[in-house]
Length: 375
Image (tube, rainbow, N blue to C red):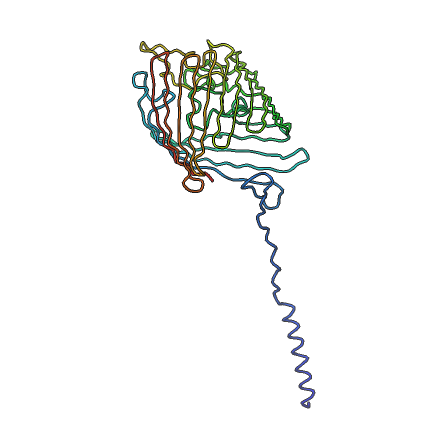
């Protein structure tokens, strides 16, 4: 065998071996492209697209802790020492909202869950709101439209010492916005007819009625509003199907930039009775005379109630608020606070309230110091 033949044979053998190794070689897979979170700015601040979907998600909440001295609602103790009491309350809140564009407008959900703790009590969990909305319709749990449509009674913590309507109930609601300042609402609302204590008293918000578990007729709310420039006016009425009575509220708002103000009045269809729309948030002891007699109707409006308030911004970080309220039953409530945001979304809010119940010759001073971080 000559050298030329040997070299050719070696080359052929190497080619065969190299081909065999090439067939067994591991080929790295191409990396899959990453899907980054996309911002969804069509529905407001904080929304982003859920990866792989066209649904936008917003997650937020707050942590709050506050100390309270006394009670503007007349609780904290027996009729003899009802004005005494101090508590420290802490709350965590989680908000989860979604929105998806459809041919009928945005399909939205809103969910708020709260966890509360205060001294002497275990942690309580509350599904505060959970509802679905589409094309002006809303179904699920939310605050009554009797409150939401006209607005709450001032930018203070103790805004409902004089009762302004129910909260947290199931409803089927239609909200109409004409786009030219005119708005309207129609709502069918749950009566919340269930007992809240062992005796079955105080069956539902504000009305102090005996339990009506076998009652099936809902409550109803209707409202109209108009806003032009700095001025707005709204009227809303609610009918309580258990008490077979109701109430009407009318409100005027004005925003002049350097300050805002509102005036709201309410009329009860029967001033001798409480109902869910002209009821009472007060403790029994606030309406108990020296002989121990409870004056239930005197804890409510009577025939009418009125609220008013102002808010004065003092720079970007500070605002002063005042709310005053008075009823036909001679309940007077005054609340004032300072809202201070020293950094970001941190709120520090001291508040002082004074309540006088002329019918039982009692009064009360109360204070709150709140710290709240929202996100």
